[in-house]
Figure 1 (spheres, rainbow, N blue to C red):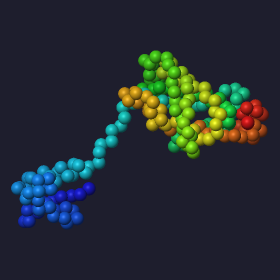
Figure 2: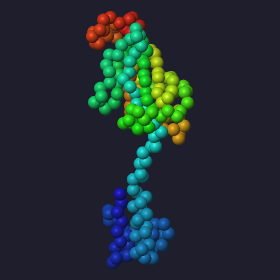
Figure 3: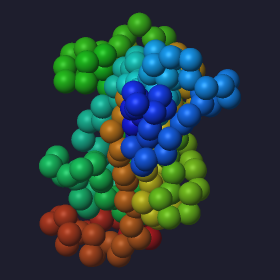
Figure 4: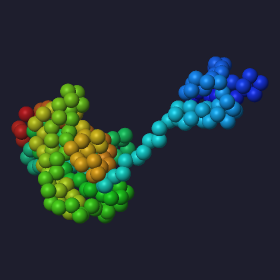
Length: 207
C-alpha cells in the first residue's frame, strides 16, 4: 500500500518511494492547503485497502451421514476419514450409492433441521475432478432430510462442493457444504472382497 506524507517545507505530498506530488492529481492545481493534501492522501489509502470479505449468509448447512451402498450392487471400499481435510468415500463401480444428508440451521447441532421446506425433488450437482464432466444426484427432500440413491456407473473422482450445490439455487437460499468426494473404482470382485474383508461380491460390483 502506498503511503503519502506532507512535507511542510516543500508544501508537497511525498510517497514512500520518494515521488513528490506538487499538485493535486484530481484538479491539476497546486495544493491550496495541508488539509487538502491530507484529505487526498486519506482517499488514496482508502481506495488501496483490501475489500472486506463478507461471509455468505447461510440458509442451512448440508451435512452428510456416513454413505452406504445398496445390497448386492457393490461395496464401500473406504469410508470417510474424519480427520482428513475433506470427506472421501471409495466405492466399487456399479454401486448404488445411498446418501442421507441433513439441512441444518446450525452446523454443530444435528437436531437443528430446516423443516419448513415442502417435500420436493432435490438435485445435487457433482463434477468429475479429472474431466470436468458434470452429473446430478437426484433425491427427495422431506422434513429437512435429503435421501439419494445414485447409481455410480462411471469410474473416477466425483466431487460435490459448496459452489456447485449453490449454482442452481436461488441467490437468497445459500447452502453451506464441506467438500465431499466419491471415488468410484473399477476393481475385480475378489479383490474388492479382500479389501473389505468379506465374502465374494456380485459381478455388478466388480464389473
